[in-house]
Image 1 (cartoon, rainbow, N blue to C red):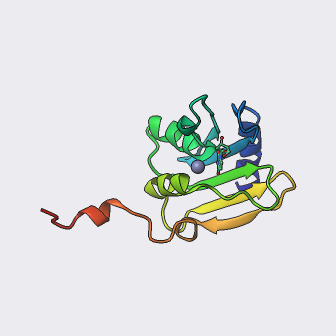
Image 2: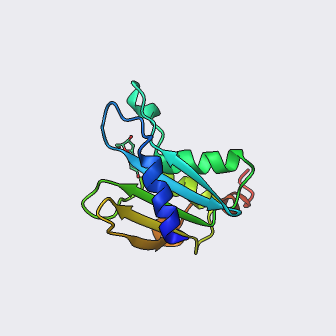
Length: 133
Ligand SMILES: O=c1ccn([C@H]2C[C@H](O)[C@@H](CO)O2)c(=O)[nH]1
Ligand SMILES: [Zn+2]
């Protein structure tokens, strides 16, 4: 599944919309036996850009898949790509702490991370259980 997921992330990367940064990223998430692809989608208003990881997760969730079982991300980076903080938090919402996250680059330099390593101490719904007011 690891190789398949990375292959799908590479395919997804080809659809990236990056007229501003020209930095293409691809992601793929596995949910209930189905792989959802995502690419980064930029905007003339730069801050509205959506990363590849979030595109893939949002596609899965919008199809009713709220449990992500594995993730792959690829970009043309020196070493394995490093997801941004926003994507780490969004991944944490739908992954378990031991969910495997495959980070790689075009040379095939791949690292296998866990969700909890990618974002230690993620904010979660449990943090809101306490009475605040
Ligand atoms: O993990 C990452 C890091 C960056 N980007 C995108 C956002 C923007 O389009 C471009 C440059 O930051 O790369 C992703 O999609 N995922
Ligand atoms: Zn991101």
